[in-house]
Image: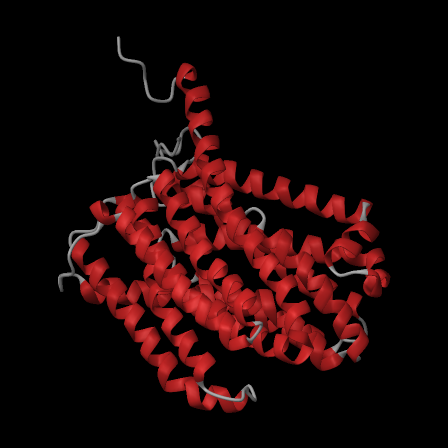
Length: 423
């Protein structure tokens, strides 16, 4: 007799499989995070404040450009996971156009950006543009593996990309101790890493075609817009702190923001593993419950840890000069944890092609900027509390939307059959 797919004997095996998949992706993402931290620490010491500031601005541009890669990853994953993609080659064509298009945009903007950032020459920005091309393509490659739930390939692609991009920057720093050297290493390493990832996933790639091109491009544009809004929301508080606070307090805030980024990125592997399940109506409910619970748990542990061991956290992250941050560093940890949950809920809405999700994010941005500008700009504590409140509001909206969706698709007994969304 065939065992029903949702019978209890199958569940331990299914849970074990999900945990294994999460472990693979978590390990791959940890490689990139550790290397990025190592590059920041090493560069800050070898380059000095002036040159490190220039490098930080250049790396910041790469982070902004990565939004396009993330949009490609999500759209590719969603379309493959749902089985709705009738023209797989249109995804390839869109990825090629987006990759080379972003690289061309980087070239066009290199001269004005060099003047705006007060750089000595345009070469570092040309190298940023060169990095955009393979970096954007990497989002497509990872999306192909995610959409087919080939998590070993996902982990390999993420690792190769991270080792190439950040490892190349470290090699360039070690050889030259210059900003140009770091950017040369980053560009060359990204091309090599993404090239290796593409070769590893070559069996998943379909030749480019024009069919369905417009629909894919519009969806990538919408998702990219939503992710860009989220990027603004999670970074604008540091800019506001720099504008409103004294130099010392702004420095304290910047150090606290490192803790925010750590707790924000720490549970991101949960979102990556859950993404193809979000797009599948049969598994969406269980995936949402599991991923929201896991992300909240990681955030709670991180926040409590920062509250209990605040001094140790500050000494490890920033050093003794920032020790006065210890008493409220837990607020920065909480901010990152709640933002991580908000981003998870945003990804869930985007996986259903929810075109209204971006409105909630921009509303949160306006609330944060308005609250800090008008009232809460007298201290680092005031700004981080306002950012935390904005993150909490956005998360609340996301949870409310999830609850309403669950009620629509799983009505109470006597109100229709609903939809089976179990794993």
